[in-house]
Image (tube, rainbow, N blue to C red; front, side, top):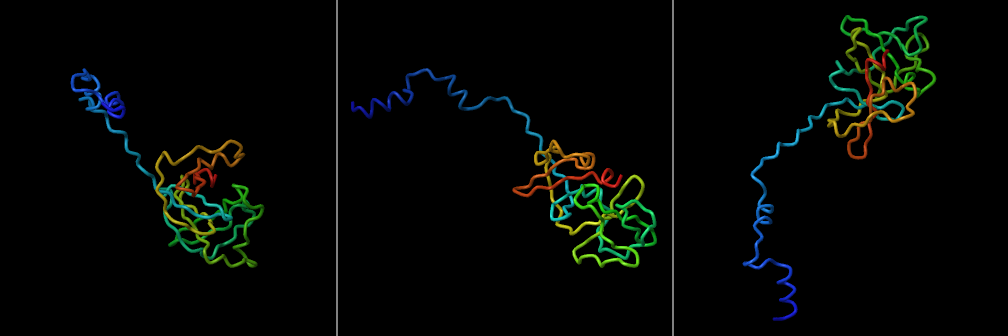
Length: 186
């Protein structure tokens, strides 16, 4: 016998060796393992605010529209840009960039010295406990489906906006700051 053949004999089992337990292990057991629970993705509407990507659950959005003429409300809080007429209903329109500390001053989009909105700007009409409310966004990106395993809790140090930032979504290399609409408008 050659040296090679001896090495092979040491590596492989011979027909006369007892390897019954090993064969059962290799064949698998008769016990059926329960299937892993399938992750059900949730759809989010992704949009841009000051060049950063944010997202809200699509179920919280009633509709998306171009920025209509807004009526200024005197002595309103700074984040209230004005009100709009949506098929006969008066809807408040908010700039959540102030709440998120992305800007110090809202755009002047209502009143006599109003500046026309950028072409890509949109109003997200969100469902809230108080009724529909508009959110001014710089542009709408798309609808993304995120599984629970793609979501992370808010990072430490997010400051006062933590109550409306509910997490971070990750799809490939894209990150989405996930917002609670109700808290963002509170």
